[in-house]
Length: 137
Length: 88
Image (cartoon, rainbow over all chains, first blue to last red):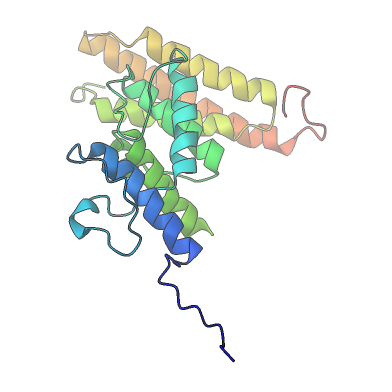
């Protein structure tokens, strides 16, 4: 009687961990040394590639990009991703205030003065939003 | 008010306060008007260089902010029960 215990050495990582690993891989592999870390070794990720400390979820970044594009009335094909700075996209300080207001309304959070002034890129905004949403819940 | 020159931070703080106060109105029309008016006014005065003109515009904005805050409270006492058609 062969008790079929297939001890496969498969990539059996828990879905939550996998998701967070994938999420933090996306912004890192783009902005990193140019080598594309396409090999998803779930357990064997080089530690030095984890430069982003608390990467925001991609949906949050996506939503922020949408709001920014609408506010600045950018043409359809303009690439807006996590690393885009507001000033590069043509926003002045008044635009930045309006964008932060729009984000507050969209996510139901309240951003204080000093944090709002330190936002320079889309990624900053998304991280701040994540932190505030977490604190709110 | 012969105070020191108005800094960029103060102007942005005023802008933010006006937009926040605009959000408190229950009436859709007044809310949208306040937002529109502050955006237009600040854009129009964006390139002022003369410090007297800047401080005049700034104190004007501050008095408008006081008016808006007061009116937000007064309007909330008579809040409409039916939402406007324009609101989702």
